Image (cartoon, rainbow, N blue to C red; front, side):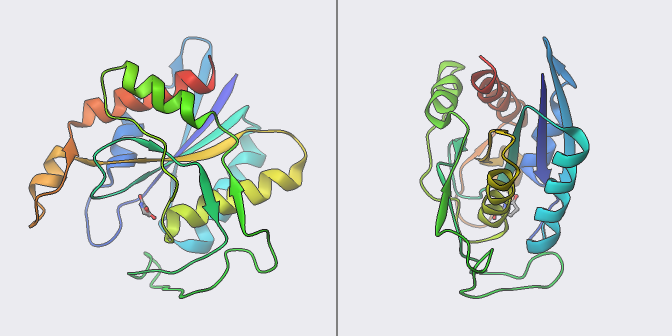
Length: 201
Ligand code: PCA
């Protein structure tokens, strides 16, 4: 079995992205599962093109995209992606869409086709904070989750896919002006491993 595991490049003026740092710590194999990792540009259109091309190239059995959510204290599998882009800051290409759809004419939303509750429970069982989130925001992460699920729905190949947000690393959190939750990087990686084990039980 193969998992396509993606994470975003740093964005918003930061030099690291907790999602990519954590994905990078994971091995390329977990038992029988092969993990194929890809870095994704933090740009609205390019992120979707990058991940859908990787799905075509890799033919994975599931796709999990990971992003950083500064301010969150838990690892959060996302339940839903909405067909809306409304950016508070420009993406890494300088694009800042306001109140526009991800896919004009597309459905209002897609639900994750990953087992989000089992993933959250597995993270908790590993002794880490994990909970299902009901919003992936309106920035590049929600956009990628929507674009991926729209693409997968059109392939009729039944590949489950979804998104998970991680908190900042404790080092990133310590550098923020306001008190912000953070987790040790190795705990974020351990939580991701637990979530993956729930996708391939
Ligand atoms: N987090 C941002 C985009 C890239 C990332 O890692 C988000 O939550 O939309």
